[in-house]
Each structure stands twice: as C-alpha cells, then as structure tokens.
Image (cartoon, rainbow, N blue to C red):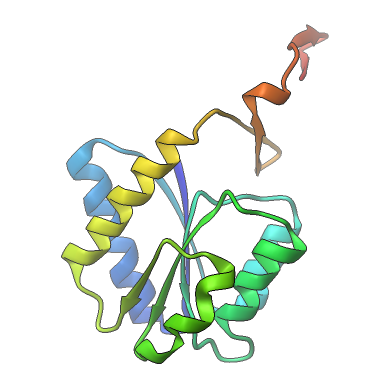
Length: 162
C-alpha cells in the first residue's frame, strides 16, 4: 500500500489528481491510500501527528502558506527525506527555488494524465528500491521503521512490541 498525499487549494485539481492516481493504481494492481488537504497548515498538522506519506503532490501557490514552506517543514523541521515530493504549479518560474527541498519532479498546470502517471511510476520504482521499511499502524496513525533498526518482535497479552 502506498500512502499518497495531495495538497492543493483548488478542489478541482485535487479531484482530478485523485481520479488519475486511482486509475493508475487500478491499471497496475497497486493499492493507494490517498489523502487530500486544501491548505498547507492542515497537511503540516497531519504530519506533526507522526503520520507519514510515501509520495506527496504539493501545490506551490497555496492560499495562506506556500508549498515551499511546507516542503521546508518536511525536509528540515521533520528531517524527512523519505517522502517523495512532486510540486505542482501553473508557474514554472519556481523550479530553481526547489533544489534544497529535493522534489522528484515538477508538474505544470493544467495537469496532464500521462505525465502524472509517469511521475507516479517513477516514484513507485524509487520507493521499491528504498523499501527496506516496515510499515505499521496504531490507532489510525501510520508509522515506518527501517528494517535494519528492528532487532526483534515479541508478543505479550495481544500486544506486539518492536
């Protein structure tokens, strides 16, 4: 299962992205858990609660904060280099400002289904290469651990400890 996030203040763009990603997953027999946010603050709050995403489609021009600040929050404050970020914008002039955040791609609006699919498949390929991860869920929050960090599992009274 791939956890995918979409953050864009245009509801139509979010709906289109979600539809394209669902079709892409269905075509290839992949399961996607897609979450949508319309503000950067909502997304950051979700991530502060120790939730993780595998791939994030992030608009640069959000209403109250911008996608660059959100990207900096992910990379610097959370020290998360695992989440692949794909920026979205109707303005290509932002591309040079994104090097520090290390996005895997930059999509220009209006969105092209073929390009979204290409980016998604590349992101999945990269994810599979680094997937030495153990994914688990506790009370609706998703977590990941590198397999090399796990020494053992044990179970006691229906409680599993890693």
